Each structure stands twice: as structure tokens, then as C-alpha cells.
Amino acid sequence: MNEKIANLIANQPTSITLEAYKMPLSEFQYIVRNCPQLIEVKIWSGVNEWLDELVLLPSLKILKLDSLRFSQKGLKKICELKNLVHLELNECEKITSNFFSELVNLQNLETLHLTDCEDVEDDDLKYISQLPNLSSLFLQRAYITSRGVSYLSSMKKLKSLEFIYCDVEDGMLKLHDLPSLEKLKLDYCYVSGRGLQALSGFKSLKELEISFHVDYADNTALRYIANIEKLEILKLKSLSKITRSGVEYLTRLNHLKTLILERPWWGQSGFKILSKLMHLNSLMISDARLHDEGMSTWSAFKHLRYLEIGRCFWMTDTGIKYIASIPTLESLRLFNNSRITEGCIPYLYTMKNLQYLRVFACDHLKHEQVDASNFQKTIQITS
Image (tube, rainbow, N blue to C red; front, side):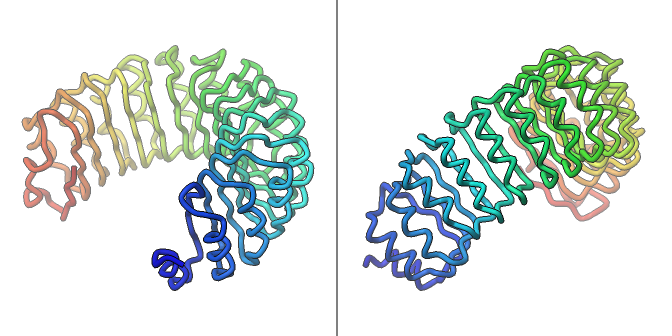
């Protein structure tokens, strides 16, 4: 056995990542049989014969498979791993409904990630919904419709549900009955107007991420979001039709602590309103039409500690002056902001609570130009 494998076994790892195309089956068998303590196994470009060996790992709880073309025997072997808690299948082919019908035997499974597994269809979600302890479900590019999504409404322990490039449509109307759901992600999904309206009914939701490809990518979407009373983290991407009145809805979110905005294309009055989010701790803005004027009210932030601004090409040194007026700010990250210059450095020195500053890819401002000794507190400055 080669030296690399001998060293791996000698270290008695609990987690390994292996690339099947670089390793013969005999070497994999040797590793498995000499590492019974393994808890996590990740296999790239796997082969079905390797799955036969996994049943020899009594402590295996986390399995991640990437780019594997399954045989029926291989799928069956996965369903024999009774102790699995976390299963990820990425870009895997030939996943059949028979597999999902047997997957329900994994009574301890808590997390299921299916990424670019295009064989997943509506009826498969019916079987997934029967996993009694599943708390996290991630689906990307699955061929599902609202009929499949509706099956998930029976999952009483589901806490996190993420859809990427899926046609959720009206399926949301059923999901607001999920009593434990705390995180919902709708990224590049088709969601109908009626589906978005259902957001108002999510009583336990604490984290929401939503991007375009929706019928109502405008003020209406924010009106429904504003009714999610317990929401703490909100990420909005490419909602291009939002106006000042739409942003006003966000001020109803009394528990909102983190707001992430990617490509918010509203006017400056909308950015001014953000300072009314009185409990906000973290604000991240990127690819925005953010001018200095939009930050002129930000001194009103009372609890903001973390601010990140990137690729906002209209912001100048005056914008940094407004940022420096935020009294509670502790961490500031600036990246790809081409119009700020070394002229903003004196404003940075006035920030009484700043402890971390990152300046990255800003053409006319380098982190080396900022002198840490000129700050009132000890500060870390990086690029």
C-alpha cells in the first residue's frame, strides 16, 4: 500500500474526501476496513462498487457523493446505511423513484441535499416527506411543480427548506402550515403571485432569501414579507421594480437583525429608509445604484455593527463620511468601489468603535494607506 494511504490510516481520520478516478477499488477497500471510526465520507466521481464498502463503517453519519451515475444496486446500498444523518447527492444521474421509496428507511436522516440531480420529480417528494426526522431539505434544479412541493406540508420537523432553480409556483400556499420552518430560500425560482402571498402566513420563519424570477418582483413581494413577524435575516436579490414605498414595508420587521441586498435597483430615498431599521446589526449591499445621498441618514442606525459595501460605483469619499457617522459600527468591508480614494481616510479615523477594516480591489484606496495607530481602538486592517 502506498505511503500516502498508510499516512492517512495512521492519522485515524473521522472525515475523508476521495476522488474515485484517482484510486482503484482495492485501495478504497483498504482505507474503509482500517478506518472504522469514519463519520464523514465524501466521494468525487464515484463508482457504484465503492458503495458496497460503506456498510462496513458503523459510525458513518455523513455521506456526500458527487458526479456518480447510479446503478439500482448502488442506490439500494445507500438506503442500507441506517445511521446516516446527512446525505448529499451532487450532479448524480439515474436516481429513480424506487430509491426514494426505500430512502424512507433512513429513519435518522436529518439533512438531505440534492443538487443538479435532474431525475428528481414531484412523486419523489412524496417519499421525502415521509422521512420522520428530516429538518433540512435542499433542492437545486429538480423537475418539480407545485404538486410536488405540496407534499412537503406534512413535514412537522422541517426547519430549513431551500429551492434553487425550481418551479415552486403555487406550492407555497401549502408550506405556511409547517410549524417548525425557520429558514426558506427561493433562489431563481418561479413563484406565482399567490405563492408569494403565502409568505404572510409563515409564523416561525426567521430567515428568508428570495431572488428574481417571480411574478411580483416589486413592492407587493415586500408587503407580504413584512408580515413575517419573527424574521431576523433577510436576503433580497434583483428585485428591480421596488420603489421607496416598497422599502418602507421593511420597517415593519421589528426583529430584523441582518439585511443582505444584491442588485437593489431602487432610488436613493429607498437607501435612506434603511436607517429606520432600528434593530439591524448587519447590512450588506452589493451591485447597487447607491449614491452618497442614499447614505446621508445612516447616522440614525443605533445598533449597526457590521457593514459591507461592494461594487457600488457611484459612492465617493462623501459616502465614507456618512458611513463614519454610524456610532456603533465595529466592522467595515469595502470592495470594488472604484470612486473612493485616499481622501476618505480621515473620515475612517473618526470611527470610535471600528475594530476591523477590509479594503479590497478599490482602485484608488489601498489598505496599506490606512494607519492603524490613528484609530481610537486596536484595529485589524486587511485586503
